[in-house]
Amino acid sequence: MIRLLLVDDQPLFRQGLAALLALESDLEIVGQANDGQAAISLAAQLQPDVLLMDVRMPMCDGVRATQDIHQRFPWIRILVLTTFDQDDYIWKSLQAGALGYLLKSTPAPQLATAIRTLHQGYCQLGPTIAPKVIAQLNAPAITKSDEQYCLTERERGILQELAMGKSNREIAQTLYLTEGTVKNYVSQVLNRLGMRDRTQAAPWAKQYLQP
Image (cartoon, rainbow, N blue to C red):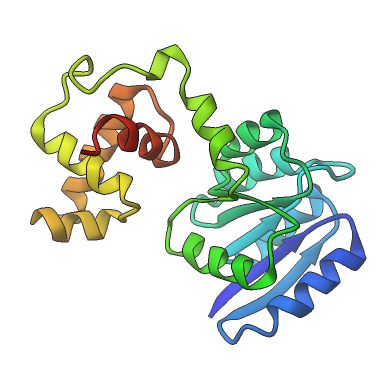
């Protein structure tokens, strides 16, 4: 069972969303909050698996709340669900620790699937959001080829698997390594590339390392 905390300052939307998601047998709504400050308190109290976060809210917005919750409880997966698709909101939310960004227009079945995927540790970006993220990643600082970063054959292999959306455990099984070894390689490569997490690394690897 995936335990969800819903955060949105529009009660009607929040309640409607809760009703729709409650129809899914593997999803459980454990709490609702109407602003970022309440989200922080409830996240500490309820320890949900996945948190659906709006962006614009009174008292404490979604970006600040995401950053606070991610720093204190990094195991809680945060999915931004909002009507705003501005680049600034998207980028700041992902930098704050959100693992996904979807618009409220996303159909309920697709949202439920995204929650399950996010719960497994994979990022989720809406069809209009992903191009914006990739565009941000095309800054000069991160458009170098793998040769310029002196990546080893092993590091390139791990990045290629990461680009396919595989978890550390799945990469370890594919390459016959321990999960801890893969984790160390991923951290090492991210530092070398100057990237924050696999959300940034995956598009880069797809562009430069995929055949």
